Length: 372
Image (cartoon, rainbow, N blue to C red; front, top):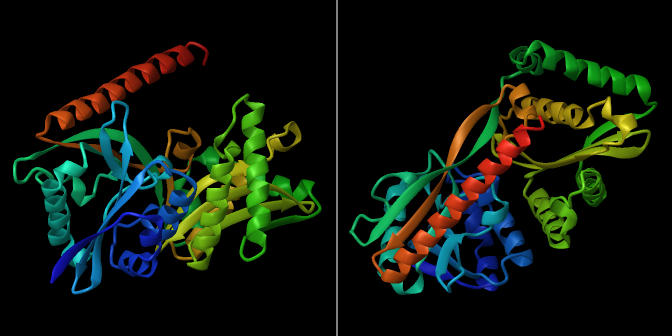
């Protein structure tokens, strides 16, 4: 018997942990951003003004589907449904058991359509191009819902071969030369060189070094940086420890002459690695060693040796990604409205905000191009 229940508090979200992680193993398209550890940690430090509305579908008690939604109040008082941890996640999706995905998604969509009094518009970001959520007719099959799909950011990823040498052979001549030259230069110029993956007590040490290095680099540019916000630091610390317990933390540090000078803060799930944020010493005397690229090369090599199939560089158009022979996958934004007047106005409000945002970015990019 299929049933749907709603978790609408932090306590009810906490009670889902075991079932959530068990379901995760039966969802082949899940990423680190669909884990309970990610959603719960984010909820504890952000979005206190949002109300959880996590839809959980069960088959005779067994969890077979999750829509980890929350309600936020938009300008104008409109109630907007979005996925939990939207602001921090590079991929977003429902969790659907592979064996019952179509049926489970239909139940969730039907529930949303029969509870229109609870929400005005649904705004789902960073939906991968392969997601069932983007399939025509998922929302609106009964005529009361209208879905609009909008192209969003691309994510870069590297398909990993079986050996490090095979991977190097895929890179351009200059990149391959730089990877080897940087490593030689570091060992030549420092008496002690150590690269480690953090576990246990090292997690706090590496994370605190990451906060310092990341913040210093952005301060040198005259900007605050992502981890200037104490809430973001608290979230990163909590999610690092929670994912470490599940064997999903990929936190690497480069120590030179006993000082941590570069850190990659990332994760892994099944056969994929996700380098989320990095920090490295950008003082003039260190720039020639390209510490960030050197540590990333180690992390990629570690992923290959661990048998991973993919190293996902996530969203963003940073120029370094192209040098690593990265491929692209597109993500989409899905705006769903219903036939109520408030819903129509709310959806148009979101579209207008998006249009203004695109025009603003276009003007900024054109201005910047004059100085390149």
